[in-house]
Length: 58
Image (cartoon, rainbow, N blue to C red; front, side, top):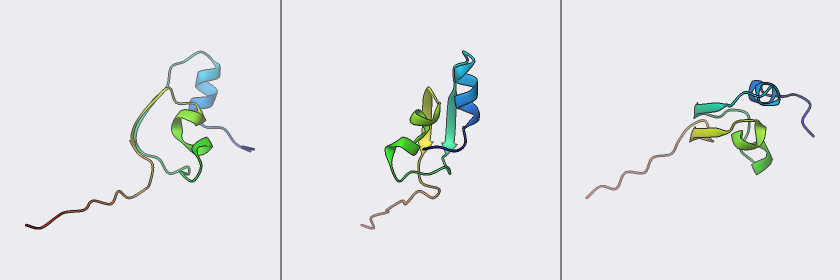
């Protein structure tokens, strides 16, 4: 159970559309903590705070 709400959840309940882009630092272990489940209609970004980029050397 969530004991707090995101700004997106408050705005969505008031009829606003919500969008977020960037890094999500609210939690990513469990789909119920992801942005679309926390009030955002659209989300473009990464869930983890630091993306891991693998570079293959030829």
